[in-house]
Length: 96
Image 1 (spheres, rainbow, N blue to C red):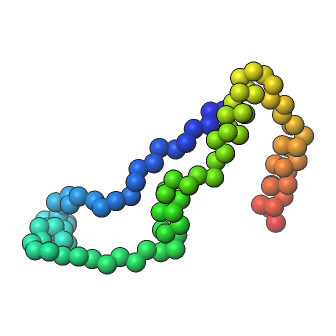
Image 2 (spheres, rainbow, N blue to C red; image 1 turned 90 degrees about the vertical axis):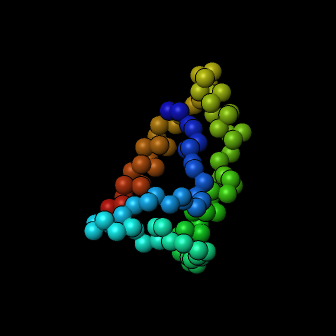
Image 3 (cartoon, rainbow, N blue to C red; image 1 turned 60 degrees about the horizontal axis):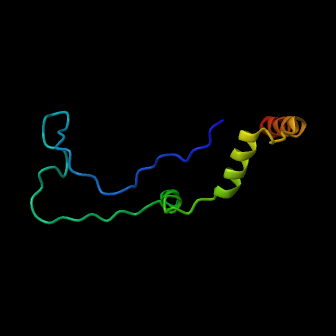
């Protein structure tokens, strides 16, 4: 299994697309002249996602490097019984 960080793109303003609606009229806001502004209220979930993108990762990079080294050298010991017990417990929780 390869552990990599997901490629993420920052969320920012989008450029106008020049789209039209079904009747062929310019989409709302397209081609508007003069200064305009809009106020947007973000939901708590949106604020949480933005906070997660701020770069604060909960991944212990040193621990990941140690696990990679142990796998590469064949020294990683896997307790299959513990994994099986956790899977069974998780399945039981889902069935409740």
